[in-house]
Length: 491
Ligand code: ADP
Image (cartoon, rainbow, N blue to C red; front, side, top):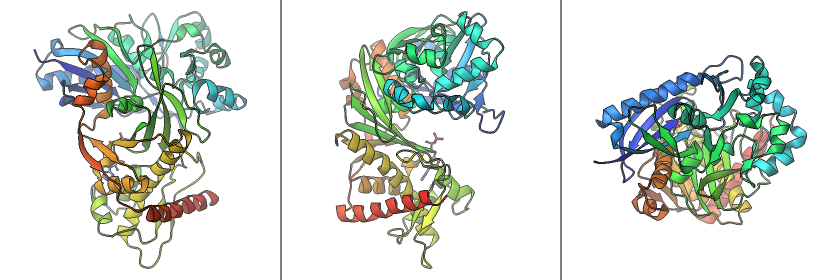
């Protein structure tokens, strides 16, 4: 019987299930939107049970669509929105509060209390103090549910990121576990010792009894007995790390960039965590057996979102694809720069207060120049991250593999290759997140023998080669840096 790997990709706005065959081809996809809740300004929550129900739905649908049963599923992989935190009652299996989503700012006040500990936290976790990460969210939940702290100390409550919550539900409460990539985003996990850190647990007053067991990303977690047939859960990783794996960035110096609403760049730094001086995060890329691989991570807040803005707010486009058509009608931006700092600037500037700005506009500037400047801005922001990564790893960065919605834009990809002076590789399967966790699951189940076998089936649909001279790159990029500097001064 033909066997498949079932990937569950649980994101902020939707849950998806994808069936992959041995060659990494997608055989069927099912998707359900999930509704975000905004109880107060800046708060973002999700109904944790709703997340679970949506996963049951998509798993059933993906099998029906492919006309197969669970018998055909070799193993299950789970990838998830990272940092989102859920606390549930051990007895009933019911959440005691909504899932607090990574974007939510509701624990910002809690984070303020730890400003003087930022160096300690950075050294131990590779993270910067920010409400994104789980520790302050757990603190928030325990402070906001009746007797939260006491019940947690009595061992009545359990914590998990979304992967952990789904494993718990799928195994009918038998397994309370997470993988090292997800653990590394909680701000309670020491990425040097690869253990929950007692000093951090004390600092955030989080009882150890409520934490899941940390396991490798490729590992037999247990049997998902919730569905009609019993299938093993064999792969778990946070979404960006799963994408790095799905892009087969197995070697030190290999990196990937996802061009979605924002952009996320991750670089494999091998078996040693590299601590950044420029605001990159250090994180676990994956753990296979005892071997932990680390990554540096940088983020651009506004990537493809600038194209949505051109379409919806500026009404310059009917659809995102038109951005390429208009930009291609001019050979350059005619000296114009656009800095899309709509919500501040991410790596390496970390400037919350900066706002969008345009420079170098003349009477000759046209809509086409403007659109091209917006696309180029995506590439320049990614170059800002790329250059820092190169610097901090002594130039070991080899190439860049890309995915995400905006990679459909060939002009953007060519410009990215030009401005980075680096090959840009676009894989055949763009669902790299789900594919990554399918690969991880397949490695643990024996579906794939080793990384070399995975490399041999992985293929690319396009490789963009740099064509711009160093002189032109320098001249263009120095203009961008001046535009960013001026943007940051205008407050
Ligand atoms: P997310 O996972 O963050 O929702 P996706 O990977 O689905 O993002 O990509 C959606 C983003 O890609 C949108 O911001 C959209 O504007 C952008 N996008 C889609 N097609 C194009 C295109 N042809 N050119 C430029 N941007 C595009």
